[in-house]
Image (cartoon, rainbow, N blue to C red; front, side, top):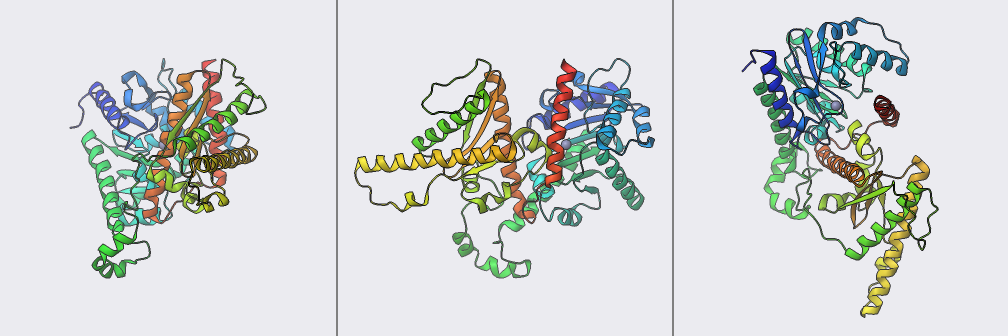
Length: 462
Ligand SMILES: [Zn+2]
């Protein structure tokens, strides 16, 4: 049903925002944004509000005439000056009395003439947008009703590039695209009713599931032409490959050695405390922790994560950043560390308890050394410690330090959530030609941009 008044429309916007925002299949960690257009206004999610809990007061009210005028303006070509000018115009386009900060994706929303826009970053869809064959599969499945956008720096440059794609689509098809897939970023659906938003979104998900299911039954080496022959021997094919579905992550918990786990946690705690307090690390010294620093370490061990942690080849799909959201919450690079020295695995004849203990100590000693070295190497290369570390045979750790226990717990759980999302994207992307990471330049842009964002936030509060 098309809403009859702006008030009803805004209530609909709140309900669709909360529904998508509360569903982890669509939205994680306060990501995504939604908007509504009336004849002269655009209501868009304001920065600092999460879709899952948003109310009518969480939307920023913008004058569409002023917003549309931005497309005709000439902005500086230098990126910092340009983004600053664009942001100033965006702020100036708010209706009088509106104080909230509009989403940086406001211009993208304004391109679509439809009443509602829902923009999300679902892992399944990002399996395609972060796949080497993503664009090809998009052309095969969706190009009649949607546009594909290659990775472009967020902000005005992206909005401008999308507007060209949008105009070309309209010129060719005579109507506006119903949705958009953005490489290494996510999904945007546009429609005049909430029901239509749901139809579009569910249909994209369903077609991707079907696409993956079709590939699922075949081993990677089997070509489409040999499909019939492979299916005849399906039982033996299945028996010879891993029992879990190749393109489906398995996050059910795995047991790990408690003593090894404790050693890894102790190592992480020692290294991160030393880093955050500036005290040179010495294992024997009492923890010198200022009252203002709280450390949180979360652990996760599942089949999928342990598989990625096995060796550098298994880890390769996670060895680069997939999307800006991953960088912002989980860091631009995950660390993978080996734990066992080659000599340890070769020792087989420990029959007595004492010998077992001796071997265990030796192994945990290797844990500590290998992990400490890997962390030091990461810090040398990146100027900071990782927010997520994978340890072979033990699992993944999200580590965060903040001024309060609740702040460090929130940061660590967001890092873990986005890391697991990256694991999903990596797993799905195998069905779309394999993982396609952001380029080092794009990663660098987001890292600096994130700092800019943060500074702006602090400045706004101060
Ligand atoms: Zn986005």
